[in-house]
Length: 142
Image 1 (cartoon, rainbow, N blue to C red):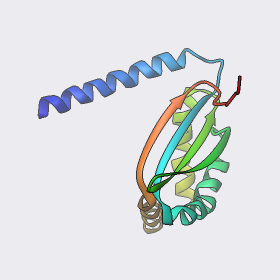
Image 2: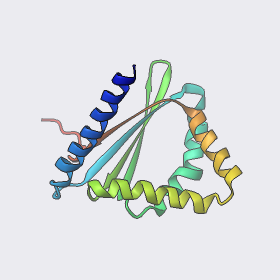
Image 3: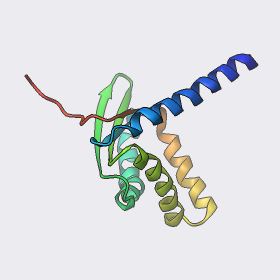
Image 4: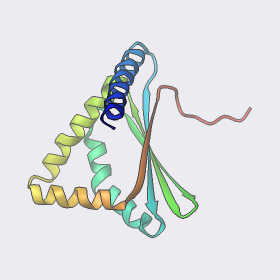
């Protein structure tokens, strides 16, 4: 079991280094982070209100995020919410994460409030996946 864990860790480090190398060479297009959140059906409206009150103001203050689009999709027993965030380049994604943490700490200065907000945010999610792309996500009919 320990060997499998070490192999998995080594693989993750190698993939991280490889992806950073290949992405950093492409400077001509913007990068997009697609976050998929799976929520319970009866929590969707509450989650969207919470995002409007907390997440959206944080995103608006983050100078590394160029734009965000939010999609809501019903699929089976859960609602999926997809956030597509646009960044100038690959490095800006990491900078945006750090800046987001700083903004969060300024918005919620005391530790109990930070814990409360994070617990509420995480309480909505049944699942979560991310995808990083460097093409413009657009739809075309040919």
